[in-house]
Amino acid sequence: MGNLGFGELLLIGAVLLLFFGPSRLPELGKSLGKGIQEFKKASKELTDSVKDEVTSEKK
Image (cartoon, rainbow, N blue to C red; front, side, top):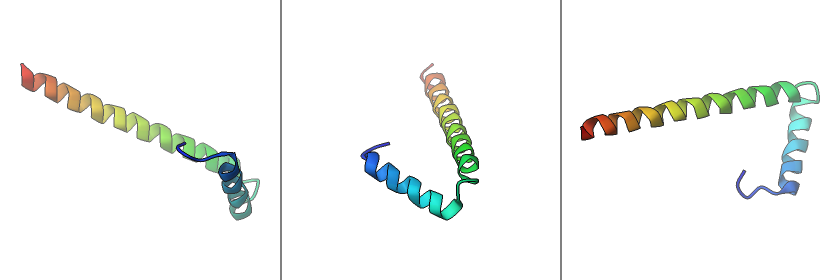
């Protein structure tokens, strides 16, 4: 998470709690997790595709 410390994470959590309320936080966390997972999957597929193109051009 870079240079975020405990204090910064606590502040972000408090702001999210104020904006969305306690009932929506689990839903937001789940959505964020799914988004990150999809981004990682797409990134890996793109990287694999580029690697395949580079190896096929060398042959």
